[in-house]
Length: 297
Image (cartoon, rainbow, N blue to C red):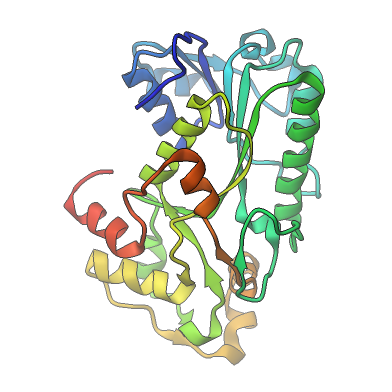
């Protein structure tokens, strides 16, 4: 893994979850200083690691945040927005409170900001048109950090990430529960990226001082939600889910899954691959799921 040449600027991770922990580990492996924000004291003991400094704070209580420690860092912002409204008030408050800007920022957003595209291929030139409050909050986060970064001359990379899968991030519970899933013909296109490739993208995005702007992050091989569930079932040796008739979808499926099924887009990742000079380890589900069978990611 490459790092910023001659740069000992610490890495700071906000959103120390499934993705954040893996990125912190990658930077620790190459000898970088890493700080991460955690909410509860128990997390400090759970995630203790040489070289890792865990700082307590709650994004909903600005006064609790270690704001001084975030300045002049290579800042990853992965924290989810609040569950309600159409603005990311957490990020807005943080941006207003920071006494000193980070040296560089990488933000994880979502391909959901494009909304329903009718199955068309989508690159970064397509104007966002979020169709849900959840996606509108993510777009608000993008706009908030873009304005912050421009005003303070801070390099910013925005990663619009497709659905993440990997070890511990598969719909196994739904498969075992045998909840019906619509047929492929009743599902729009969805997009995914393996966690190993996402981590590599995040590391390279922070490591290249000339890089800024918006990038789509997916494996470049779209499919339907039904195809995804079937592939995971096959990989785990489980039965495929029963087919749910289209007429029963709205009465049977929860609102979030209905949103995913109601939006269709195929994400173009060519700009990302060219900018990072990157070849994905898992450019499709076959590769990604095979890796899960053969060992930890």
